[in-house]
Structures are given as structure tokens and as C-alpha cells.
Image (tube, rainbow, N blue to C red; front, side):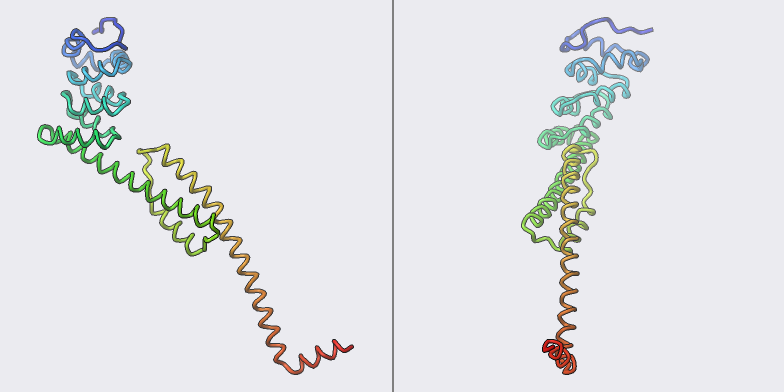
Length: 232
């Protein structure tokens, strides 16, 4: 059985580690114990190991364990299995860094370039969608606070909100907070619209009564009968 020499995996990479990474064969890198050790190693070591990895599955696991875009950009620009480098680009969130990765790989590795380019488009779409959804939420809040909300306007905002599909994988926390914020505002708006509906129903009732009274006042018999009762 292949065994990695014992060492402090949290420390930075050294030349002997690079030699070790180059010498690990497919059977060794496929070992769960070895994978667990490597995933727990320092980011610097993992990046160096990915560049020399022979096992694509392990390289992907190490790439997915990276927790910041600077490290992912290093993997995307570096050597190693193409799928791991593409995965690094797909996991990034910083548009400026992604632009740099796309620029650096455009003429060198089209698959990584395409992954970075697609990720840029995905992030831009997600940001635009969030901005649209936030604008709807702010508009509803403003209308409710100024007592200017109407059923027609609320219906249109609801329709636009339903057509806005917030990402479930990008800016997850911010999107969830916005959904919660809109849900609370929707409840308030529904109460306002309900109150308005009751007001207009009452107004229609009063209007009908006044119309009926006006019609009766035009009836001479009604006027005479009313006057007679008043005199009594």
C-alpha cells in the first residue's frame, strides 16, 4: 500500500512536496485516506499538487475545497487536469479576476477560457436579476409607505416579481434575504389592497343608497308621504 510520509500538511509547499506530488501514481491518489489528508492541507500545497496531479477526480476534489477566488484563479491559470482548471473558473465570483483569467487563457486553453467566459455571463445575469428584483421590492415598499398602492399596480409588481428568477447558486444569502423582505412587504401590500377593496365596497353601497334616495325624491308621492309623516 502506498503511504504519504507524515508531515505538517497545513504548512506551505516546499520542493520536496512538489517531487512527492509528481511521484504519486493513480492508485495512490485515488485512496480516500490520501485524499482526506490532501484536502486538509494548506491552499498553497493543494494548488501546487493540482498542477502535478495525475488523478483528475482528486484534482477536482482539491479544487472544490479552495475557498477564495485568488486561489481558484491560480489553479485556472496554472497547469494540471483541464477539468480541474475549468472547475476552478466555474467556482469563481470575482468578475475582475474572471476577466483576467479569461484574458490569460484565451489563446492558451480554450476550455478554461470558455468556462471563465460562461461564468462571467452567469454572474452578470444573476446580478442584473437581483437588481431588478430589488427595484421591485423598493417600489412596493415606497408605494405602501406613501399610501399610493393600487390593486392594478400591486398586480403588475406581483407579475413582474414572479417572472424574476433569483439564482439559487449565486449570492444565495442575499437572494434569500431579498425573498424574505419581499414576502413581508407582499403581506403588508395585500392588507392595504384588502382595506382599499372594503373601502370601495362601502363607497359603492353608500352611492347606491344615495341614488335610491334621489330617485325617491323625484317621486311626488314619496315627497308628499314624507312631508305628511314629518307634519305628524
